[in-house]
Length: 297
View 1 (cartoon, helix red, strand yellow):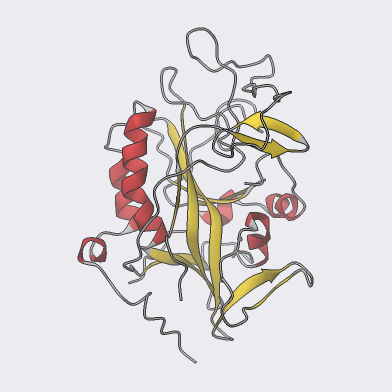
View 2 (cartoon, helix red, strand yellow):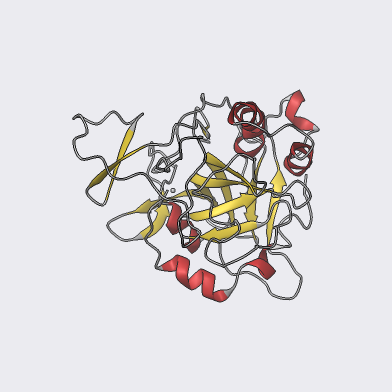
């Protein structure tokens, strides 16, 4: 099943300058014949008729007034990203998200805030930022997001592709990043095909047409693979709050991260802390990360 024009908004949103920046980015949250895989061609009744774009459109009608409500909504959406299809890159590659992280930031004064979100007001560009259409592919310092923002409801929402598998259509094989050669190479028998190098996805997910033709599509192809329980997003810090529990915004209109921890207990509890640039920080406690239980065969 093919969804046309799903990523047709990608080219206008992503400039050559953004791609060049992504190619050299290092950032706080650098948050991996015919194809007949039996797992990919199995379908389940509950996924067969429901498509990702439709579910993201439905999300706009659901309650999003608390983190607890969003926990429920993201758990319901996760299978449609992880087992509901893949990103088709021209006739060359298929990109299957295997781990995703949800991000949600309300622009309303009393809405749920997620300060780490890139595409929001007063971040990178001063003032109000236009909203992306549903299923825009957004390139940024930490990789690629699939967005599902809503201007009427005034929220930013997306999933980061944290981990992925790449199918090479021409050589009919999975590709794995090789650190020695610094290339995506065909996997060796028995090798786990999942990639965690979020920034290196740019070597596959690239070459965007200008002028209205979309060479990047989402293809519905549901499978029966199970999804792991939600866990914490990688390298997302806690941000400072005032006595009323509101996030503190500095004079530069940026949210302020909590200070590094001087005497964190060792070994680090990875459910509470993470290390970045030789410093230790409190880890955001929102469990908005989901992954497939098994890699795709």
